[in-house]
Image (cartoon, rainbow, N blue to C red):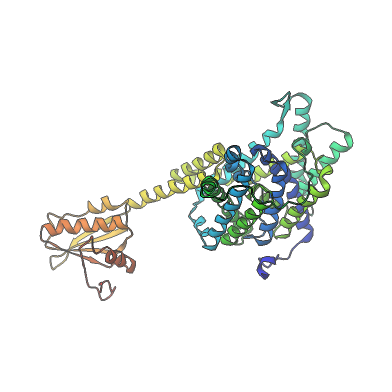
Length: 510
């Protein structure tokens, strides 16, 4: 258990002052977001704060890397809205717990490594789309309810809100030039709060969203029938929630790895997320996953250890228990300003500088992923589609690389030296390389610079040999790698070829 409680994961000295201040800043930005998403989904407001506390604490201590922050994230909550409307809150808690179990299985079986399949253009699209989503979500704070109708702020309330947001952004931008000893985001929140409080400025506060007072998260077993029918109802939601949470979590982990030039543990993060979501299901929390916005707030505040996440989670619990009257007076304008700066910092501005150097298909992939993220708020779907498009493009480009060098040796044997991978996309081009009707009686197909990779490739080789066999011509395969020979041996019922003995490369099959 020593590794789990090690705040010095990367042999870095912990700056306790920085970690504590960063944790307080994260807590201030997480509270309104968790409340907003809980209300959006129709959950009791406290389920959002409980999720922020439970997810934040468990993943801070046991998660895959220092610096990451988890909480009641909108990406996972959005998945559960339909279940809430159709079956109610008890089914939601059960689905959250089941999602946690699925996430633990992913970690135990070390499936987190598959995040490596996400190419860089997909990451660009994901991050840029998420930055836009974070920015656009702040626009909701410029709305108010008048006579039961949601309306945009206007007149003095709008100008006050804009002025306070602008002040917050200005402090965050320029305060680091004075000192970096205290996070600029926290200073901005304190200054704007003091300004509003002492001058009696009328503006939107956290209390206008929901009350944040309450007790410890209560133990609660979901009151649902234990049956196969119940499982059929909650399993699809749990599976999607688990997928979305892990996708966002592992992508966030990779992003933090790049920013801090350190290495996290994806499988450990999966287990930590799953454990936290199981606790959410039994302690009245709406569940969640790593939150990239709060993670970036944490990193920008200078945090590089686990302590800030623990401080943030503990602060949220203390606020629920004791500090609600003060936190409810925080101006939303200050929190909006912080989140806008997070959105600006999240966006990969470098993608504009290198766009002229990127292949067109990479640009297309990045744009598609960003649009899906923005329009559907479905991060898992966006990444999945991006990976699929990238894989198809790769297959197409690889298929075009198959080529053959032809010559006849002094013995009258025709040689085909194949270059490039032989797989499902390149089989047609491969078969077109052969002059079956005019070739001599003996032919050697040399795979020294190629590789047979799948069943489609085996079938293509089989068809070529059949065409030669009909003309009573012999085909030999040369320089096959061990795995290629294994494929052919396993397919001996569907293919009939001669493997040329080669003492140098030992390609003969026993």
